Length: 400
Image (cartoon, rainbow, N blue to C red; front, side):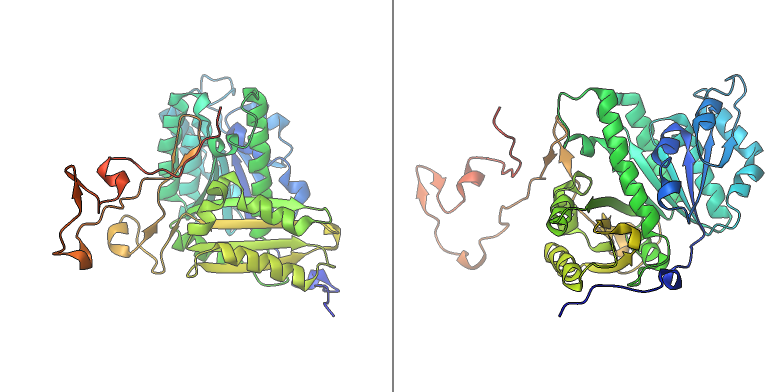
């Protein structure tokens, strides 16, 4: 008989981790507004240059950095002045970290507050001896070239200063929405998806896993991936919930419709379920996920149960974009054996394009010395696509 996964006293397995989710800027504040009610055992705070945004913010701990000449209505677009203000209020920023061991900075990369102030706060947190992660939303192409350029610069700084960065490219999420959707609604939908994943992250790094998944596991994942990670969360509460969450996971745009999952060297999977979840259900999730992964991929699983979940089933998955079995020093990737996954390209519609593979043989191998078949000046032993200069592509767009 298959027994349900169950523990009579969930308090015995819960040991709260001192984690702070710190929203920086307007986008960051919006993205974590819902988290305190969902994961109350973590700490939350917000930092902004706009007093209006902070007034609307429901988080208890808030810090306003007032940039001269802006009437507390934003950063003023001057990075140097913003950094000067941050340095002058460094003690107040450090006070936000008290009693925390982990800080997760949540910000949008397109704005000055998130893109400039965020990295400075990451630097202060790291100097304080904390583990620092960043969860960052990357702007849509439609938001303009200047914002995209600014976001790339900010992303580079975050990667240099944080132990790990989880990137949420809104352009990837855009691919699953209606092309005729208006920009404000599209941004809202993308924001909801990122917020959902951040909720999963909050659960992932808390304690209280029935089957162990610790902060040390997440930390190891970040170090071995050099901080290049993607994070997704999927859920269902229907009678067919197991198949539904697996289908959602394997087609999720934030992991390139499952392609990144299949190529990754490291995956952490958190399963959230009710106390009556069967062991056979967990085994199926584990096995079907493992079947998608590389045979040599590192794969860690944790299971968290809560009576409040009922028949709800959720998966939180952290996927490494890079992987190294030997922890490298920063800036020496060429000598470290660090594996970098193939870079994905997109066309003008944001659709993924598989990179071209060089299939031309450098030598004739075991056929060396054998005369080729020549007809009308063409070597018929050479594949047609090479003779005619045809580039192979596995990218297919639906007919218009």
